[in-house]
Image 1 (spheres, protein in one colour):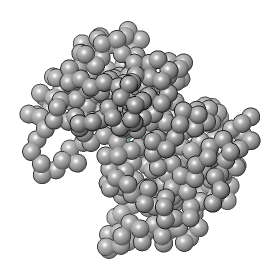
Image 2: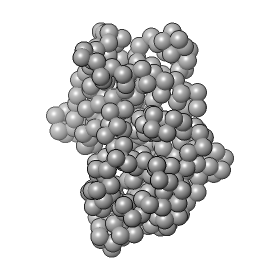
Image 3: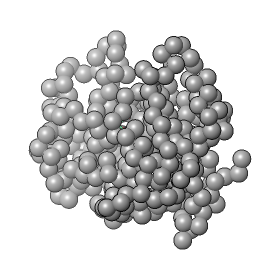
Length: 326
Ligand code: NCD
């Protein structure tokens, strides 16, 4: 099938790895327009009228699932939500069979979240409809990186040249991987910070020469924060290490060494912003007074999530060649 739009020549959004800086710019520019609609009394566009978006979430989600649903509805698409407990996955059906059956109902987009890295890629190869990755295991979470980029661009005016610290459970974070790829493509430099036990080898190699040149690893929080423009904190993903030996002594010790507090935030630039994809574990990776301070843009991230997902759905299911080029 031919690409949907001349300015965004992709049928699916599986990972930031597949996008270049120009593609990311198209999404962010379209999201800028959609962000304005949140302030309108009638938050509705006709762009995807008659289209169907299925949210197929096999892992828990609050922000991502809801914002995809709101995004679809704001574009007048019909949105259907499916979770494993209410689907035949609970009866032993494979992911591919479930997805093929949904595809047979003629949706335009399937948004999928799955614990298995590569699940969206598998669906994109098989289904007729467009596939959007809403988080696959420890691999990628492209719309999170795009909404993070939109938030940074609005707060800082640009992304090129920013110094971004990403701190926390890098071993299990698809958010960190997608952000590393996205930010380095847009010209930022990334400091990756975690204890050795949560730091996968080769992370800076993820995007080849580009990430090798524009990212570095440190196990010292103060080093990661020193002079940073943006501090992105990540939750420890205990659900991915169930049954394994603990990676650190206890949450208090983790918080003391890697938690962002008013004291440690002082190492960053005075106007540095604090980000978190959510859900926050208050008092572990992020002190409540910092999470609730004017430095945090965490709820702005959530609001950009709707605008960015509207942009992605529109680019994959709508006809926006003219809109994006205008
Ligand atoms: C993240 C995820 O699911 O990868 N959350 C999100 O999408 N907002 C991060 C996390 O669960 O810690």
